[in-house]
Image (spheres, rainbow, N blue to C red):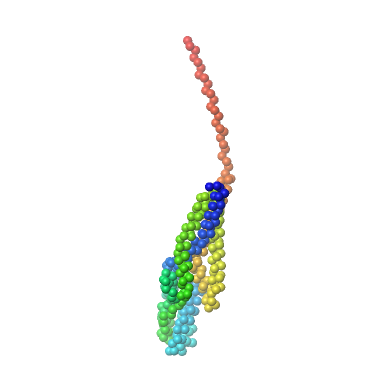
Length: 307
């Protein structure tokens, strides 16, 4: 293959690999976060100690409990008397070990419900029942001797997670991510190795691949930051933006780590290639030995005189 054609093919393969690297990381992260329930629960577990998340949950649970109490005529008269105690009890509950257990159980149930809906073909809303959490709050209120706490109803409060109309579109995207999560990272590696192998100047090809990988990691980190901004901007006013930001950061923590790894690894490889090249160029040349000339003729042996 002529050298110009090899150089063009190498540049094309390396460019494609640098584009596929961040896309493959994004697809692999999305597939992993959607299908691995223990990993999702582990990622969300630290949010149980986040003050913004705790306040948002306390407000939501407190309003839900009082809304359910207002539906019952025999409990409605206690609204003004008990409402402050309910909100304080819920906030106190969010600082207990029981809340952290309930938080993990709720996230596990939510993830399993969403995953089941994505794998199922039926179009029905995805909901989570808050009755177990309400029962825990009621128990704490009764233990603190709050008036009429035992009369707070523990109903099956279904909280919508995903509407039925969005499931069809999400299923298609989920199936695409299942395929892309494996093939995109694999294709990025194959294209990079092939591009370096066919290059005329492989050292330069390695440097270009490393710099392209670093650029892809930086663009991925920038995309996450922009996505966070627009995600929070599109939320309704009644949703706590600090709590939503904490959830976004927890979900994308692994992807942010991958983006900085790509950036750091790319720069490290490019710098290593550059340093080794300079060391090689600055190495003094070895002195050449003079070529060996023809060996001198041996002196003839003295001839003995015959007697």
